[in-house]
Structures are given as C-alpha cells and as structure tokens.
Amino acid sequence: MSADPVVTALQTSGHLQFSENIPFKENLDRAGGRVVRRPTGHLVFYRSDGRRFLATDPSGNPLHECEWGMDPKGGVTLIRARIKLDWGAWVGLKPSGLVNETSLNLATKPGWQRLKADDLRAMAAQALRVPLDEVRWFYRDEDFSISPNGMATIRHRKDALYVLDDGDFERARFMSCMGAMHWGSIDFLPVVELFKSLLPGTGSAAFELIRGLYDDQNEGKTSSLPLRYRGIPTYPSEAAFRLFSSFFVPRAPHAKDILSLFMDPSKAHQVEWFPSPTPPRRYFDISAGCCLTVQGGVLKKVTLANDVAGLPYVNPETRGFVPCDRTTQIVNRQVIVKDRDQETVVATTLPQECREEPVLSPSAPVSPIDWRSLFLKGVPPIAPEDAYGAVALYPQDDTEIDELATQPFVADYIEDVAEQDREIGNMLARAERVLIENGDAVIAACIVFDRPRDYTVRVQVPAFAQKQAQQLWSVCARLQRWDWLNRIRFVPIARWQQDPSSAHAFDLAYQWIPFAMEDDPLQLLTAMKELRLTLRSGGHAFVLGPTSLSACLAPSGFRMIWKESVEQLPTFRMHRTILPKARLKAGLTLYHVRGS
Image (cartoon, rainbow, N blue to C red):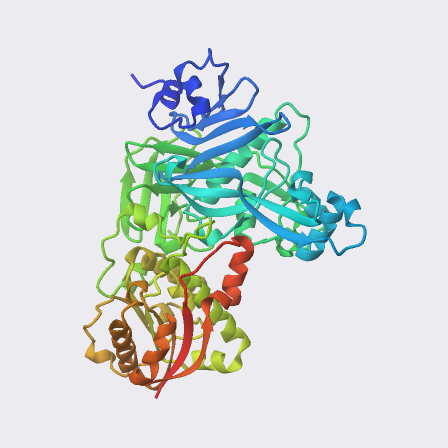
C-alpha cells in the first residue's frame, strides 16, 4: 500500500527544517494547520493565518518551505524560505538578506534639519538615475536616517539567495540577490542580479514560490492583481521574459511587439503580467532520481540527479534548437530521454495530467558535432553535483573572491576593450591560433565568433570547462557554424611537460596564473618562459597574475604593452555596485604583453 502523501510530506526527515514549522510535523491539526490538495494532486500546507509553510508534489516531495514571523510593526512577514531544485540541491531565500548603505553629509546643505524621507528619496533617484516612483517602491521610510550632525544614511535592501549545502542555513553560501519583494503581498516581478551565479533551475523554482504566494494572496478575489517588472536598475532580458512567461501572461494592448517593449529598460514596466492558467508543475521521483516538469499537460523537461553532464532533457518543441541534443518525449506512457542517438527509458510513473504528444516526424535532427568532442581526450570524470554546481560564487562580505570567480572580471574587460579599441579588436580578429590556459570559468568569453580559427584550451577544473563546452556548442548551434566548433580543442593542463608541437604555435594567448603559484618567483618565471615558448615571435598574450610578475617579463622574452589593476577594472567596479564589500586577492594585475 502506497504511503500517505500528507504523512510523507510532514514526517520525512529533512522536509521541514525551520523550527517554527516543527509543531506542524508533530500534529498538523493541533498546531492549527491545514492542507489543500490542488487539482494536479500537489499539496500546500497552511498555517492558521493562511500563510503557506510547505508545498509538495503529489507524492509529498517538498518543493519549498517557508518560515513566517512578525515585523517590527506587528505584521506577518516572510523570514526565510528553502527552495528545492530539480536535481535535488536546495537554495535559500532571505528577504532583505543584503543591505547596502550609502552615507551623505548634509550638514552643508541649508535647511538640512527639515529634510524628510521623500527628500532623500529624490536624492537617491537622482544619484541612481531612476524615476522617483521606483525609489518609492523599494525604499521604505525606515531605510532613511539622518543623525544629529547631518550625516544621512540610505539603505538599499535586496533579497538574498544562498546555496544551502546541507539543505539548511547552517552553511549557507551567498549566491545572488534581487530587488526586495513584498512577500506578504506580491505586487511586482523581480529580476535576479549576478544571474550567472545561479545554480541550474534556481529561477524557475524561485518563481514557483512567487507564483504560489501570489495565488494564495489572490484567492477569492474577482480578479488577480496584474504585476509589473521593477528593479533598481532594471535588467530586462530575453531569459527573464521567458521565465516570466512560464508563470504569467504578458499584456500590453498598445504594443505591437511585447518582447521589444519589455527589452527597453525604460519601458519594461509597461508590460502587465497576469497569472497563467497552466503554470509549470514539478513531480519528483526520489527512487528514480528524477524530476519531471509538466506544463499544460505537456512534459517540458526531465532532470536526472545523477547526470554527469549537469543538463536537463527538454521537449524538442520548447526551443528553436535542442540544447546539446538532449530531448525527452512520452512514448506509450513511458518517459524517454535521448542524448543524441542514445535512448533511455526513465523508470518513473507518468503524472496523470501528462498527455502523450505525437511522435515528431521527422524527428529532431542530431547536430553534426557532440559537445563532448571538444575534449580531445574525452570528458574527465565529473561528479553530478559538481557538474550541476559549476557556477562562480561571490561572497556578500569582504571575504576574498576565489580564483575561478575572479576570471570573469578579466575576460569581460578584454571583451569590452576589443569592442572599443580598434587596434586590440583587429589583433584578436587576425589571430589564427589561440591558447587559453587555466581560464575554465570564462573559456567562451575568450572566443571570437567571427570566423573559424584554432583554439587550444588547457583545462584545470573539468566541471567548469564542461559548462563552457556546452555554452560554446549552443552558440555554434544558433549560428549553425559547426566548422567553428570543430576547431576548438580542450586538453588537460600538463604543467612542466611542454608539448613540442605547441612551440611557437600561437598568435594569441590568455593565461590565468594559478593563485597557488603567486608567491613562488621561480614558478612564475617558469610559467612565463613556457608561455613565451608557445607564442610565435610578435605574438600577444593577456596574463592575469601578481604585481611581482612584472619582474618575470623581460627575462622571459616579453615586452609589456600595458597593465591594469583588476581592482580598477570597470567590470569589477560594476560588481561592487551590487556587492560593495567585494575584495579581490591583493595585487592582482592584468598584463598585455608581446613576445620579442
């Protein structure tokens, strides 16, 4: 006899973690709780005040857990939430978990003693270059204060997202942030900042929570409150539009093209979003290690927890091309996943709402090149949790940013300079053979998609390099330029074992000196001599290393063209507008050098 889903939901270890919710686990009725079963079988558990504390799939597998408390004014407020991702990991949400403060000296301003919160809002709007209405939306009266000596403090609150290594907040690691939501009464849609740091599936799982709370708050009303996208500043994107559109329906009666309207930062808020009648629903099967995402009766996505590729299988009709040739389909009430030519039946029970789609004829064509073929010696062994978790994370405090997370500041800066500086742009365009070493988090950013050329990528961290290989495949698939992809080769780093075939072979190199080598002058000198040996005469290189690397350039046969402190790069300064306490490893310097 199958287990009661309500009992499974409440009694299974790890489903309820917040202390405020433990009484519901012990006795739901006595604690004043109740459970509602949705038409799809999904369960939502509520407190006596109507606030949900747990949502599960029909089998009782958790989707998210909420902890509610009281704010200083005595109102009910969301304290924390845990959100389960498709592949089994948990992320945490903490409202106002990130608070940035700005101080202003108003003592020299005549009449500063009479300044009110709205006056400071106007100052903030001017400084941030956003409409005053947006500032009113995000800055409460308590976010402003003026001391007796005329020092004003303005606090910008953001909701913080965390990686929960053990499924709870004991070892939470900051992941990203978004505009502070009004969780007690959902009234706008946010876009996540630091979106490249999101674990796969975070966006859709977080919107599952947002949509659930929104539905709770609009239940019994004659019409649902339309939502608009808001943010300071706004970051509209096609990815955000697709995510919003999964859970809400966009409307803009006077716009011919709603997407174009949304993509205009100054007009994105004009699009109204209404609840979709068929939002995505997730179904977990723990024994099979899978999660099915169904929308409108159609199987949209299958995620396998033990997948070493760290990618879902998607319905071939959901996108313009099939990401990495991985599709899913229902055949004879069985879930079939297909990775290129390899088909697998997932041993799971199909949800009742899921209908069988007609078999595509002809079937989606397999691309000429497998993304794995970029690895010359095959993809190294990668654990599934590493494959899914290969994202760069940034501390919200002044903890030093690690090596992998530092790489994007440099790669993005070089990319920007190439667009603005004709000489550097031409130099990158002329290169026929390019070396990328130890830049596993930014390989794709170092590749120019203008024509075929040879790239050799020396890999240090396979999980990150695998994500980059998949990204490169996607770019070439969109462009239908498989000849470009065919000339990119990933090989393991074999330091101190120089490949004779690479001597004087490259026109251009990108090299990130490992942090572990930066205190060893001999290793730095050896690394630069090796790099020089790989470059042809007159070849260029961008190298990230310590300030002491300057002393190694001339002895290695390099002439320095320019150098920049990474801390002063515009890309890092932009990062600090989100995380003002961000701190790099001291002395990190980007060098542009040329072989003599």
